[in-house]
Image (cartoon, rainbow, N blue to C red; front, side, top):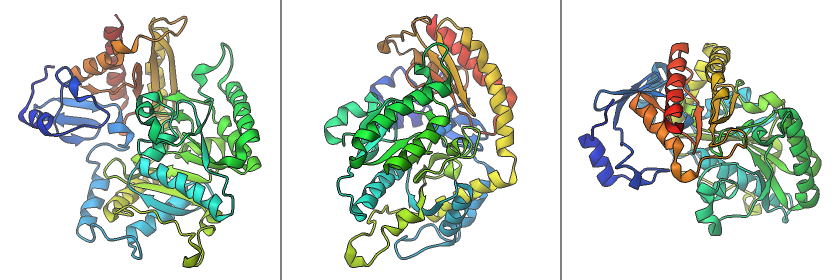
Length: 450
């Protein structure tokens, strides 16, 4: 496959500034102009097609142009496109809240809508702080987070993130969180199990709580997989133990399920694998099946009650977005939930995940692979310069970018996290397409590390 700079791609480069991109790269890295999508495939304006191995930034669950979701949005377009959500409501928002309460862990009874994942994090942080303030705990003003965590790029969300690539430039503008060592199983000792390492890292969190709980509003975590930090994975027992610590020390638990929710980890929500209920659950990305931006923050009746008071008490949660509760997005989310209700999605995902595991397993023996790890429909391959010591390649060599370019030329959309190659495809993928995806990435890894 060769890339030709089309008129649309050139017009883009003359006018658009893209996210998470060094635009100076584009003389080397082609700008691909996509005209349409179908299922797992994206099609460009030169007739080439690409297998979407990353679900278009982890948003797409059931494939591009999925008919049921598309039809629901078209139907909603003819009824109501948007209405102010302060003092007004509508059927899609109410029904979606009711259904989210039904399918999330018991005890989450209120839904606050936002526009995207970062906005949901902002809501969760502010709501936690404001709850403690309304209850008279004015010293609770800080947040704990895990090392290597990522929660978004608005200032509050970035404040509780620990990926230097995104955070360091803006550090003077940010809150200072308490960063606690992650239970990331990649860091375990030789022969140590994921579970044993998770329990060891719980001791670090206990030590922080023992010293600082009086000043902490909440701890925010990405359940089971720290995605943008490198697809770092850990044992669910950590979440169970963390829930117990939060209860013991009166610290809220915020579960950022934005990337891992809706079946990515093998259960509908990752928290289910630890049998816990967080104080706040943050949802976005797959919430609408990848069609429209929407986020939801679920919380408890107790937290809601702390804001429910006479207006003159100044306890109201005065946070808003212009497109809060957008009917089109809510209708897309309802159609997405229909597919989980009406199809054996999780059962099929278990079969697909097993096949994905079989396909990536041979990479364990690759001389430049330190680890192959998997949680449900997420698999990651860690490239290193030296396998024995796990010494990484110098970052300036950008081996992951070489894998990306190779895969793109061979019809697979990959977007490595540095030198970590990962797979997070839409659930409509077939076993044959999994084989194509992994074979192409393996060839790209061989090319980039030779």
